Length: 124
Image (tube, rainbow, N blue to C red; front, side, top):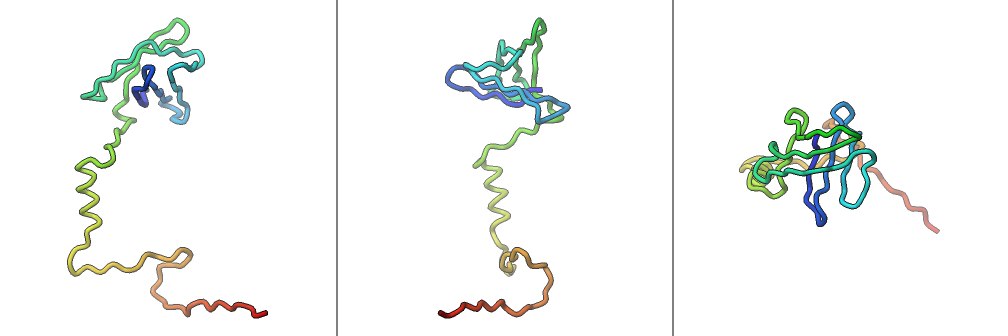
């Protein structure tokens, strides 16, 4: 399946992902070989990623590869209006609410108070 299409200076950088083993990927970078695979054509639709596809060949076989909607989730760009609104709602404290200090690593969440650790420094 198609993993990504990124325009670059000399063409496109394309990533293909194996559906069965998602860590198995093939990358097409301008000026570099991708083994037996060849990137023949890229059709990128800037309005809808679902319509984007690439033509790839291996040996005598050719085929169009596109995004798989069931396996690929498109991330919202950082700083978009929806993301900013969601974050601001979470981070703004409501009046009357009290937030405790952040948890200390290595301590359990119990409410027992323990004596503070005393540090002894040897004298010369």
